Image (cartoon, rainbow, N blue to C red):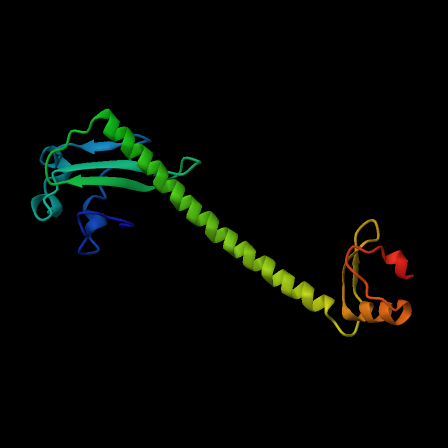
Amino acid sequence: HFHYNWGITPENNYWHEAFSDIPMVGQRPFIVQDTWQEPKLLDNPYVLGAPFIRSYVNVPLLTHDEHKVGTLCVLSDHCLTLSETQLSMLSILAKQIVQLFELQASIMLLKEKLEDVRLSQIRLKSFFNSKLVLHLLLDTNFRILSYNTIFADLVFENCAEDPKEGDDVRRYI
């Protein structure tokens, strides 16, 4: 199916089937300069009728690990002869499309991971804010990384000062 299109709007669900016999050959563009000369397309409704496709080019969309995920297709109502520069530009565009798809997938994955981190932070915060148990988190040098109100109240009652993150906990013992 179409993710994006310009110039031709698919009117029904049969569009993708109309050209499903067109092969995705390797990593190079596949070109049909004249659909009237391609036996597989002679009875194609989009060749015989609107939009009267006369030329077809497909460029494989390959992921970074060479998986084919689709094609970039160029359709025209007249015969096309593309130069090497034009074919190269289509290949570059195909790579950019895949990079955008992969970037979008990475962003979605990062959003999921960010949500996991937020949920972990909420669970950790609720653990540290417990009113029943003293919680104190120290680094390897006995510096306070985090604490709950029970620890703060205990330090204030015994030392008449408020503990601070980064303080050496031995100062309050």
